[in-house]
Length: 385
Length: 65
Image (cartoon, rainbow over all chains, first blue to last red):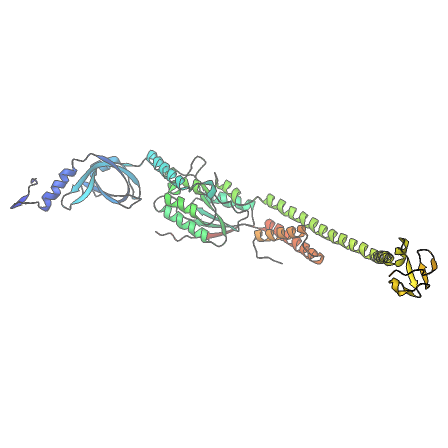
């Protein structure tokens, strides 16, 4: 291998492309071996090649890393890797000198194990929880009686059958809208999100049930996928999560408005029981009869009271008139001059005119003095005007 | 008389009628009409529950891949 030696142009040191690449390559070769996590987006293996080419992607940013691994080493791992799987790769940075491309020379590849998945899930769970996506305050109440129940299901006859049977038994007048979609493997998250949107857009669907029976931990992973979990939280109608068995807690369970351990339990959550409905109807009917009877009785009573008042009216009128008359009489009394005479005053008349001025009479004139009881004839002896 | 509305709508109307009658804000002749309507709704609801079979609609989502 030629050494990395510059060509000298006077004082200037100039490297050829190959020597530059080799220089960088040897520098990179000093970096320690590391583990890298990524999603397999491309895997090229050919019996004729000594090397297997794998492209890893960072699912969050889309950053790409080219990985190479010896074919024999790769085959000995017996991974049966598929695109879309998340792996851990151990290796060193490497520069492909001919193309100047950075890559990772792998010594081993591990499919991210249960432990890895659990840790990744735990991280995502903490992140979403911190955002408040699972907060109880976000949970919406389920409709009492949905016009239609949206069911998102895989080709899982059992889960779908249980759910439909439960709804049909409890509430036969109901309606279900079933959207069958891919629920596991590559592309499942996108399919689930599309199905959720389609169901939510249905004009009658008032609640959606995610009906996915039990499955392996990996099979249920799409229901913990970040985009799916966010879509569940953002769905415009309440969502009931009935995914997996009781011991599984996919993250969509936490984001959903209600969680059911089984499809049957989910059915019981979304529609009331037939007998409860019958009880409610009977109660409505009893109240209806009672209410109309009360309404009629109230009216009859009102009529009765009106009758009583009508019959009492003439007498009442008379009494009121009499009372008025008495009152007027009393007022008349107070105005009568006789009452004044009662208090000791007297009316003095000279002729027919009541006397108001002493100078109107002369000594010897006759006067008539009217008292409260009887009157006196008198004569003027002295005038003091 | 057949009513195209959903069971829930029928039941809600029945409950509204009961509530109005209970509040007593209806005239006598109206009250009787309300009562008749309520009875009819009750019978329709019961019949719906008895005769019904769950309606199932299949929906296909536009899967992107």
